[in-house]
Amino acid sequence: MTGDLILLVLAALPLMGSPGPATLSLSAMGAAFGAGKSTNYLFGIILGTAGVLLLIAVGVTGLILAEPALTTVIGLLAAAYILYLAYRIATAPVIGSGMTASKPPSFAGGFLLAIANPKAYVAIGAVYSGNILLPDNLLLDTIVKIATLSFVIVLVNSIWLFFGSLLSRVLRNPTIGRIVNILFAVMLVASVALSLIP
Image 1 (tube, rainbow, N blue to C red):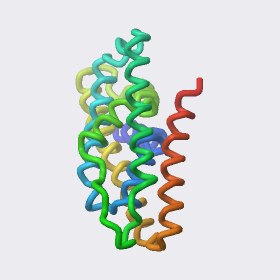
Image 2 (image 1 turned 90 degrees about the vertical axis):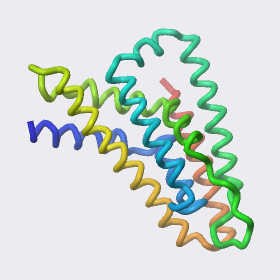
Image 3 (image 1 turned 60 degrees about the vertical axis):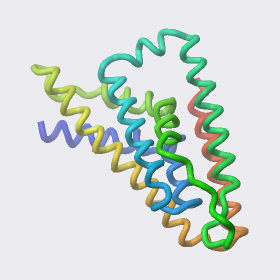
Image 4 (image 1 turned 90 degrees about the horizontal axis):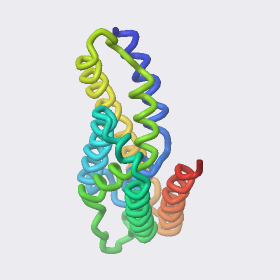
């Protein structure tokens, strides 16, 4: 089983850790506000993504995706929030610029983005359903996969926030900092647009 767990983690890291709305927003929060001020947002992303994992594990995702109207409403709400978040990132004061820092997005904002993140459903769904660790005990298989993938969720999201906060230390120049904030905002919107293309 140890070998299967290692394979699960190796499959999960690139899929769940690749750039997407949640990971890019975390990096942008780290660059725009610093890691300390973005911790609540990180916890929201982690718990929201863990919520996606639980929805996949219990099969609720299939029910949601089977109802086109509900899928459309969730998609529109997610798109509206991501556009709002991109605006907040693009207009955030550059750290060290002497401007009064705006309030970073909250735990609730991170949670909502994560739970409505289309990439999370695809990536976690692929990893979760593509690996069976204990075929003779499906309950234990589910518990082990949830625990392992929860660890991956915490790891990859923390790394993206840390990466962004490292950038904040380098980007004290107001012009460069503003360009990077805008670039992160554009990449966030683009990541969502790309995830919606069939």
